[in-house]
Amino acid sequence: MKETKEDLKRVVGVFGLSTNIINIIIGSGIFVLPAIIAAGLGSSSIFAYLFCGILITLVMLCFAEAGSKITTSGGAYVYIKTAFGPYFGFLTAVLFILATISADAAVANAIVDIVGSLFPKFKLQSVKILTFFILFSGFGYINVKGIKNGVKVVKFVTITKLIPLLLLVLFSWSEVSFDNLAITTTPTFTEIAKISLILFFAFQGAESGLSISGEIKEPKRNIPKGIFISIIIVLILYMLIQTVSQGVLGDSLSTFKENPLGAVANQVFGSIGFTIMTFAAAISMIGYLSSSILSMPRILFRASKDNVLPIKPLTKIHSKFNTPHVSIICYAITGFLFASIGGFEQLAIISSATVLLIYLGVSLSVIKLRKRTNETKNEFKIPGGKVIPILSSLTIIYLLSNIAQNEFIVILSAIIILTIIYFIKKKVVKE
Image 1: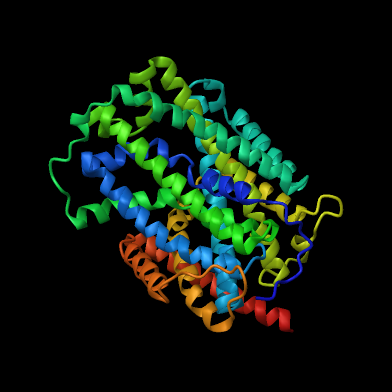
Image 2 (image 1 turned 30 degrees about the horizontal axis):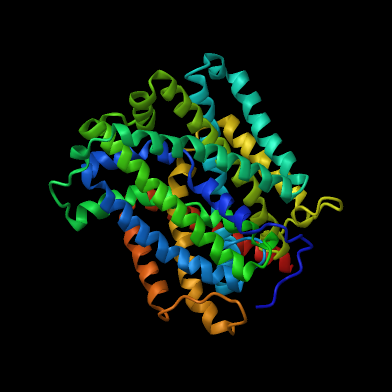
């Protein structure tokens, strides 16, 4: 497929892409999920992880094929826009950006809250705002200076966040009671599916990490490879964490809903373990922010370059650093403002459902793109014809059908408002 010139440098390899995806997926969720999953399935929790592993594999196969066909910046946005046109591209770009910024704001507040549990001064409003400023301006500055700098930070933070989790898994085995892991009853498919609806959201993030596609070396080969490496690592790590948590705490795991991994670490290492895991949670969240501020401005840049968002300054590339510096600065400023103001309940509601809609759009775009483009050398193609994209689409529709009525109303209202804005914008631009 013909690419649009972006004037960005392709300097990110498989390791950089994989760590960016892993860094976004492994955020704060893994630090609370074991207790939530155990409350629903107990020692049978492993079935939910296997089920979600199958679901996310279907979706990521679609991302891998679309990503090897379309290698410009923007990830899911540009896949959907290329397949279905500027209207769906506009909806994807705006909803995606709003959902991610609201998530960034929530994570920034969570960082301050968790650090505040150890250092009460961080609960002061002035200290909170100063912390938000340091986080967003710091990561914004690093990414303006060059994607190599941004990826270096992502690599460092990803490794830093993985070390305590891997150490917890490694040293907890001596405390594991295999009686706690014994599966005495087999859950029904309905029970597994219900818990999987919660767990599935812990696997989201690749859609954001792929937004840097325009700066990946040998994208047709490295994008699919980066996706598969990251998803396999995340799935194995999640299953190991759930296993040791269940093995160490047994039935009491479900009672530690605020900090189950802290409870495991406390039993294995003592009080120092609890403190370390608390800091690990904060580092994990900081890592999420670093990847988000690296990745998401590329959607603003690409959508503006396509004139889907008619904001020309966002298309500017820094003459020295070859980065979309205006998009990065705008995204960082908006994230800081959202975090400082707080109270984004409605945006938080549409966040998770928006990601599912994007997954559906990418799955369907694979089918559409096959009709519009010819396969080229080194391009990844899902085996089995249309089976995987169709299964992926049906699975996502099933998950969307379980969204609560108030969430559905918010999503529908947002789409209607954005549709009106899009057609007004289209008419004004023409005139």
